Length: 231
Image 1 (tube, rainbow, N blue to C red):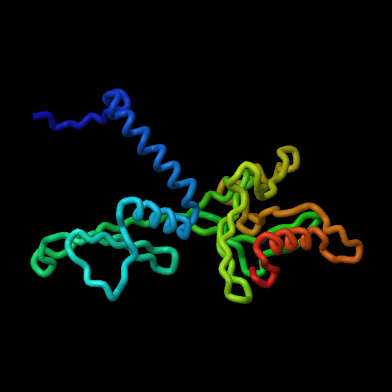
Image 2 (image 1 turned 180 degrees about the vertical axis):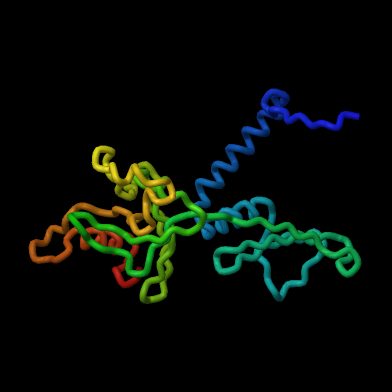
């Protein structure tokens, strides 16, 4: 009996069919990550995948029978999938599988928009275990939902398509960042510095104040019907 265990590289051991399945799974997982950047997005993706597998919306008034497949979504963030079997629940119990959607991200603070030095920014607060220095000078997308004054809910997705603008967080140029470079990674970028640049064009009204901010608000109003108070 061999008491030792030697780890093997699956790509060296797998045949063509196995590799095809591995790559197929990876492509599906990549597509899931692309469409599920927040827990709300993940819930919508799970709903779509469940319906493709024959799951239907759950009703509390419905009496289920063996073979029924139902889904229930709680507050747009939690998804429950129910597959009814044939065994006696009182005798054999139920089988529960649980998975957690982890969504490290930057959330917008209440009333986040401000104008400074010819640019418009959104104030953020990081959620989850992130390395703050990794979030500067990279393209960012905005995902979320806003409830307007009349109760209308608007889903917001900006920055995923090639034709759409993206957002970013300013960082110092190397020759201006000597003090910054002397800090360790945990203090390289402070959380209060993670404010997102969202606009730089002035509104074409000479009498208006905060022209950059007004341009951004006018775009949001045109596309989603929202105003600054809706934040």
